Length: 435
Image (cartoon, rainbow, N blue to C red; front, side, top):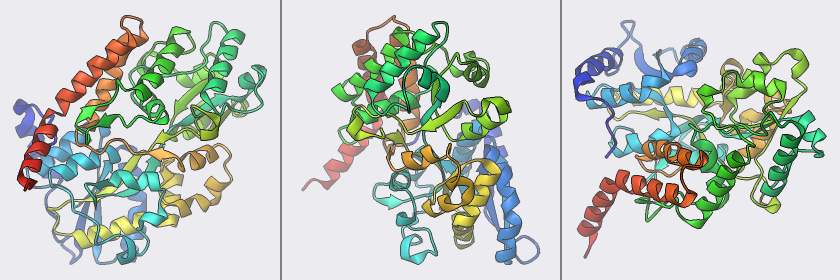
């Protein structure tokens, strides 16, 4: 069962907003079939530029895009589902797919992908990016754009530290960070915001942690793989190689990067554009990107996570076929390349990476390489809650107020409590299936 974050006191108002903005599909008044699409954040804004071309190629369909802020998207989608008035099509963060599939709100797409589609087929996507869209053996989403983490670094500082190129394993990485810190004692070798869960999660995955165990019903964070990653991670703070700050406490991270007070940053594709906008022309040659180091060099590049957004159809839609035409349109390589130019979001279709704007960009190349080694987060509806507990429970260890083993024990206890209902449901299912 998915969590419902709405307070009862605010349910009526939120429900009214969602119902007003969603509703079932209907005619447009000019004989065309209307498809209502909820796009989130910046993507919901720029996708409107693609609507005229879609409608030109599909004259019988009217595409209406409603932009939803990311901060309220999850709540509004759940409210619309509860009110039986979701959009026909929506952009979902791919970690949301299991949650919305579990409450039976998404339309399975198995009969539409593959041979039945003009181009939406698992083989046309990065395999690690397709996997998060599969829940309990069925396809519920189509990757729209991808998000993963790579290493942004100061080329000049790494060279001064004696490295000809970026580190490929954790030993080299740790050595490079120590040398950079020695060159600039008042600065820091790497930025690891304490309120973000992504960095420690991918380090754990690199060590072989499954994060959850027992069929996704218990936490595995005390296990040796994740514990080894946490000790490496916490050690970076204890050695003062990373500042103990959340992202919001840092101020202008780009300015600090330009000054050299931060030399490395594990971050995502949106920062390709941000670095180009925020650093002056003279600073553009200072930075470069690389795939993540691995625990051992033979494993390079180290795994990252398969993030990004997907396109999903809702069961309650009366215009599923028309909405699927939108999915196929937005999945075309040329359209994905156009969307990248508008938004800076990296394409999920591998063919779109052949476009010159990406193929000839040396700073985007690390993302192309990294996407060959990405892993999906655990496909349980409760993952969003678990992810937030990661940052919360590890901060005392980062600040030296708690031992790593104690922090991980408390984290596993939290996760086991979050997953209690999942264990109960699976036990009931097992009892029903017993001979």
